[in-house]
Every structure is written in structure tokens, then in C-alpha cells.
Length: 358
Image (cartoon, rainbow, N blue to C red; front, side, top):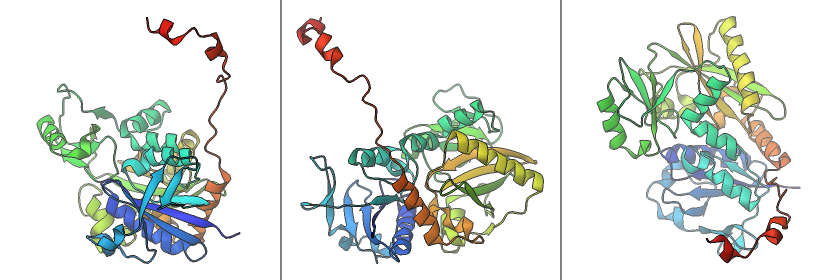
């Protein structure tokens, strides 16, 4: 039976543009075998069905994009509608980065619609998007992390260089090196990137970023380890997405040249983390190597280009990797809410409502 695949991309997020690129790539790859519907989520939180052949530049001030508007309906058959016709999918490929597409919001909506989807479930999305919650979870499980502080009072003492990050956000946008509280507070005040909070951590000079793709379907598998080659002190948005035509053209060592000891330690940590937060789809685990010590940095649950490029030297095509994500999503049941206790006994035993108002 032929499958109909929806691909959602865009969204009201700082990573909106990168999501468009990931989404369009996914549409092209999957269209080789499946009927694919491209769902564009605009910056102003509206939905559109767009042509599968659009290029990235078509999403810059092009009114054609807004021709086929979609509605979200919570009726007896909830879902996405084009005029009066409901769009039916076997599965949704979530190609959203950051914001409500990656923080559990979209996942919650799709759960209510009973639509299966790739990528993180609601809980994993929430934990991994919250840098302080993720840090706390790793620390509680005795994994090496760089100490983080929430910036929410005037009592924080900064000596030396620190890295300021949005508490809820991606791995590069809004990430700044600071050396005093005043600078941090000015940055936070003047940018909505930090509207949901901010964290700081000690800046490790001359540290090395190490990235690895992880999946659990059809079996546990990891990609080669990447060492990004950065132009700046931090692995910046410019390094990651703008140099050499985009993410897949960024400068990197793949595989990274590492000692057997560091490589084994990284893989051991990946396996431990995967038991704590099981991967769905393809996650990208980000580590920092500093003075021969390895730290867990963060998990990107929907990485740019779905991190497919990390497998380019291995025996996995991009289609095969995406197709496995689809098969995994189809094999899982999300809406397993429990009704235990909702048996009417409390309603029968209750007195009238007026008596409960005091």
C-alpha cells in the first residue's frame, strides 16, 4: 500500500529558515517513493499546503506560498483541512527546528489529532529543549556536564568568560560569550531569544565540539563522529548554516580524528544517555572535549537536515534513513492515555456543586 507522508516545516521559531531547508530536502527525498504533502507553518502561526517543487528562495516575500491556506479544526474528525477536505496522512515527518515545533507543542497537537509523527515525543522534546532541565537530568545521572546557572537574579557572580544561552532554544542562535553580569542582562533585556529564561556556563577555551547522530530503529545505531571546524571561538550559526552553502557544506572532520579512549568514552556516554532519554528518529548528541575531558553539552532532537550527512561515509542512503524514521513512527502508539479512575464513582459520591462552593 502506498503511503501518504506529510512534511511539516517552518514554524514561529528563530530557526524557521533552517527548518524550511530541512523540510524541502525531506520532501524531495521522500517524493521518490511516496505521495508527499508539504505543510508550511508560517512565522505568524498560519498553515499552508505548498508545492513540492518550491525552492528555498520561494519562501522570501512570495505570495504564491500563501495560496492554499489550511485550517486546524477540532471537530468530530480533527486535523488539517484545506477548505472542507481533511488532509489524511499515514505519518508526519517533523522537520521543525526550535520553537513550538521541537519543544513538545506540535507533538501535543499531533497526539490530539491521533497523527503519527517522526522525531521526539512530547516528553523528550520538552526535556531536551530546556537546557537547564537537560543539564540537571544529566548531572543527576552522574554524566559529566559543565555547571550551569539560571540568570534570574542579580546575585550571580561572574569571574572570567562565560557562555550565555537561551534556556529554550537551539544550539547556536543567541549563544554569546560574556564576562560580566551587566552585559548578560543587557543582552537578555534586548532580545526575545531569552524571553523564557537564560543560562550561563563557564567558557572552556580551546574546547572541541564533537557531534554524533543516534537512532534506535530498526536497531541502535550511531553515525560517525563529527568534529566541526569553526571560524570563531564558538561553533556559531554562521559556521553551521551559512558557510559553504549551508549545513552539509560546512567544514568538518568526518570522522573526527580521536584517540580510541575518547571515542570509546563518547560511545559509552551515548548509550547511557539513550537509556535515560530514548532516541526517536535521529537525534544529534553534542559533546565538548576540553583538556582530554569529555562533557555532555546537549541533545538536538530534530537536527538540521535530520543529521543525515553524518552517515554519508556509511552504508545508509538519505532515503533509507528517512524511511526508517517513518517505519519507526508507524510502529509506535502515542495516544496511550490512561482512563483508570475515571469510572464515575467520584461523581456519584459527590454532593451538589453548590455545597462545594463554600
